[in-house]
Amino acid sequence: MKEIPAAYVKANQTMLVLLTASSILFQSVVLLAVTFVIACIVLVCGPRFNPAVIVYKSFFRKTPGTETEAASLTRFNQSIAAVLLGTGLLFTAITSHWLAWLPVLAVTLAASAALCGYCIGCVMYYQFNKLKYRAGRMKS
Image 1: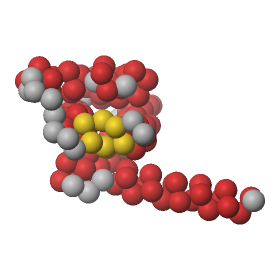
Image 2: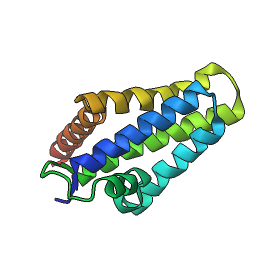
Image 3: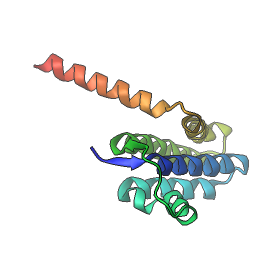
Image 4: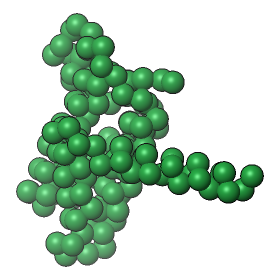
């Protein structure tokens, strides 16, 4: 199983919180679009193209601690964030109603909770895999 250093995951979560909170605070669709593009690039290209990881590496030359997170879990969480950011971007393009910012707020809150130690995406990942396992057992 491929692993990603936890410091890189925390750097990504911090970047998501800062960018999404700023886009909500300033009602900036451009900043939201930049955040969405970054999330998509990270999904497609992996953590080595993540701006948060690049900045982290430039400030902290030594290798991160031994703590790691599963790459599949991180990818799942990043996928959820990208979908919600894309939804928010689409809604803000269609309407200027404040409800369009709710998916972006969900990303902000989830990333903030993850920084505090509670990973909502991890719970969803566990439940999804449990459901997938049960469905597979019922077929056989």
